[in-house]
Image (cartoon, rainbow, N blue to C red; front, side, top):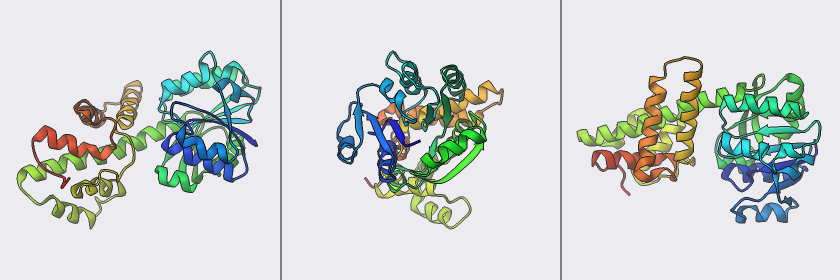
Length: 297
């Protein structure tokens, strides 16, 4: 497992992951998407550019760090997809936040080609990606996990083997649901507090000293001072993750009142034009919806 292919190295998370693979001595081949600029330092450091995902089929393993299941499916199944020229024994590591149903279906298609698909989505931020200190959860058999762990150690600080194939993408969706429940609740609470006439910073001070506090809450609290970069995660990506979560809940026949509420809060913010901004823009959406001033900016 010395030659790694990478799709998504120009992204905020992917760049740091690819950079650390190079630093740890792996040979790296990358596909180039629309944005070439973020790849310049990787190519200068020895990464090789390939024209299509199919060319990565000759690698020992390929990492996918893309938006979601449609992009994963295109990378694997397209006319020039990885499976069109994959060598027997190839490992494909899906580091994206993908839909479990799609992951299970793709794993079966990969197995038919002698390829193993591993779900290994990520936690933490682009800052930890550059530092090689991401968290990952892995769905794989013990034998496959032993093969991928040395690769994951190149860019992860904490690696959790959470179960068999598909388990990691389920846990990732649970994680993101709880996370976005916190961010959407915080934005709504700020709006209610501002509308009710209190100093919202005082509310933040109280929460910061108690059990309700969290890093996510503090990332949202920075918006009061005009900083909307406390959580560097695109709002539309969060909306997509919650759609996957509510679909999962529906498939296992669990009512998802909270999940649907969080999803609709994100969808509303996106419809108001904030989808391409970071998640803290939920506060801007609340300001627009409720005609109230929350942020100093």
